[in-house]
Length: 56
Image 1 (cartoon, one colour):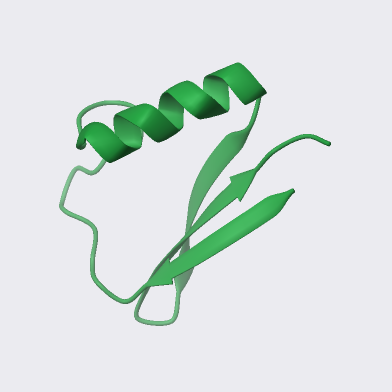
Image 2 (tube, helix red, strand yellow; image 1 turned 90 degrees about the vertical axis):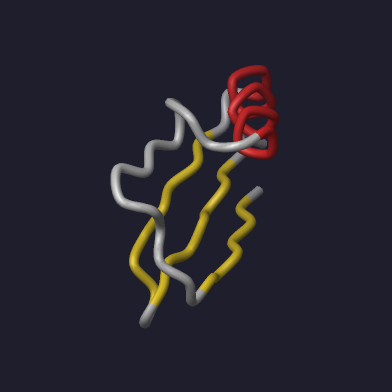
């Protein structure tokens, strides 16, 4: 399964998916670890896209 969310806002300087961030990112990281999934942040237009991939 692949899910993607686009956002036009910039990421804070020094943003790290695994270190810091809020409770939401902490929960997503835990779920991805359990489900062996991945989270990628890729440029999308003027913002970025968060792409979650889970194995079938």
